[in-house]
Length: 244
Image 1 (spheres, helix red, strand yellow):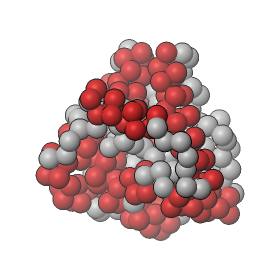
Image 2 (cartoon, rainbow, N blue to C red):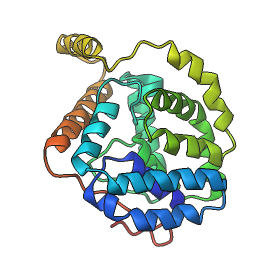
Image 3 (cartoon, rainbow, N blue to C red):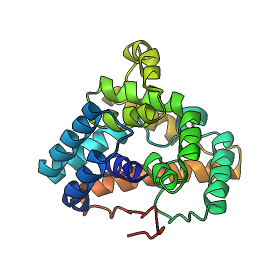
C-alpha cells in the first residue's frame, strides 16, 4: 500500500527530498481509492504546503511539535510503556516480527517509531495492515486528538490511518480528555523533566538502559538536525522491497 509510505514520509523529519517528492506523493494519494475524495483533497493540500514552505521553518516546527514533551511522541510504545522494561521487551518482540518478515532496520530509528512501522506495514497484505493498525488504534486516536489540539497538519496522517480501518470515530472519544490535559511542552514542564532525568542514576534492567539511551539519542539527533543538514529519508518499494 503505497499510501502508507507517503504518510510515513509526511510524519518523518522534513527534508529537501521530501519537498521534491511532492508530485509523486500527490499522485499516490490521488490514486488511493480507499480514502474519500475529501480526505484525498485534504492530504494533497498538506503535501502542497510542505512543498512550498521554507524548509528551516518546517524543521523547526517539527522539532517543536515532536521533540518537546512526550504527549505527541511518534514512538508508539512510549504511549503504553513509557521507558519501563516492558517497553524494552515490546521492542524486542517488534524487531523479531520485522526480521521474520524480512524487514531489516538501520541504526537510525527505534523499531516503534511510527513512520518506520508504516514502512513495514506497506510491505504487508491488506488484512495484516488492518489488523496491526487496529492494535494501535487507541494510540493513534489519542495522538490525533493531541495533534489537532496543537493545530498540526500531522493530525491528517494519523486520522487517515484510522480512516483506513474505519476507526476514525475513536478520535472523538479522546478529544475532551486531551483538552483537559496539562501540556508537557511548556518551558516549566520541560525544565521539570530535565531535572528529574538528571538524578536518574540507574535503570532497573539492561533493557531499560538501552531504551533510555536510544530515546535520548533520538531526541539529541532531532535537535541537531534542526541546526545541521537534513537527514535522508528512506523509501521502500512495496513490490521489490528495494530501499532508496
